[in-house]
Length: 409
Ligand SMILES: *Cc1c(COP(=O)(O)O)cnc(C)c1O
Image 1 (spheres, rainbow, N blue to C red):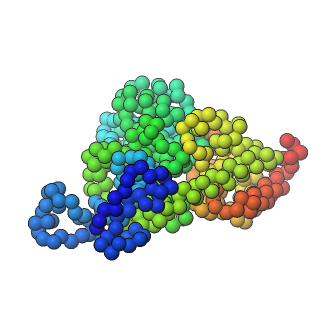
Image 2 (image 1 turned 30 degrees about the vertical axis):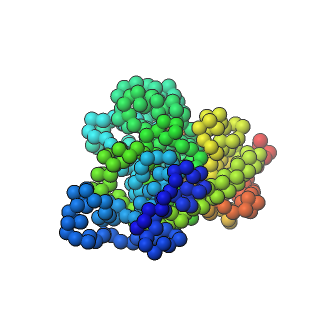
């Protein structure tokens, strides 16, 4: 295998197509799929030298694989990170980033508005192993200051958050965390590597569910952890090597091909999202819309300061609570009901009864997830077809409520 000399300075769209590419002796154009669990050695001596670390040679795909390595290199170049390890799922990435770093007696601080399984790791799993955990409201800097006024070893946060698009001030929170002795892990799924660079804003580790925009076509699960080379090699890699959350080379290959179109897809979906968010905000059946470019988005200035775009997710509240939301969702013909996001197909979710059911009513109320809230993952369809589908959904929502919303204001 010959290394294609990749200058580091290419812009994101170019890195997404060429970054990390290495070619075999056959000089193939597309990235080769090395669907192999293991590797052979020319001699017993080469096997010995490989295990002793004096020779670089692939050993076993749980530790490393050439197709997976191409994906890791491409993601690292895109992120501007020193190193990357790919994992089987986004949750494997979050879990590995945390569990490889913490030990009994440590303290972990997290923003409350986390993806459900991330919330479970912090609230339920970590305390089982003697790790103290605390949640704070991500937008409340006084709460972060209080929580980080004493020693901590790790901070986990998500910005923008799912589904209310709450923004955490990364510059301020990372500096508070570092002063408390903690590393900061940012779940950057909603922003994608194109629209927010947490490492430039002070974060130590960035994690992704590659299942979302990176594949973006509903095919495979995958995850990634990015950070400094020393941490990745000394802390993360032994954990991955010995516990095995490794990514299949086949899925890595699908993800490499998905990344080639990431910039085009995110840009197109974001344009449609901005247009539909503004349109939804003007509809009488809609009580409120959350999208970072809207004039009434509370954290608009912060979003503009730390993000390079506003993203592909729109959250809105339809009048009529659960009844209105369900009537809208059931009337849609093009936009599908699904808990996934970041897909080329537009998808809607009712968080209160699905992704955020288990956190309970009180916690949902704290996060602002009312029964009328719908999370809308904007895809690649024609914007007018989406608008017509939403209009039919809103008409059905209005008809489902005994008192017409337009009349009641
Ligand atoms: C989907 C998601 C995850 C988990 O990723 P999987 O690939 O489903 O394991 C973690 N965090 C966020 C913000 C997500 O959207």
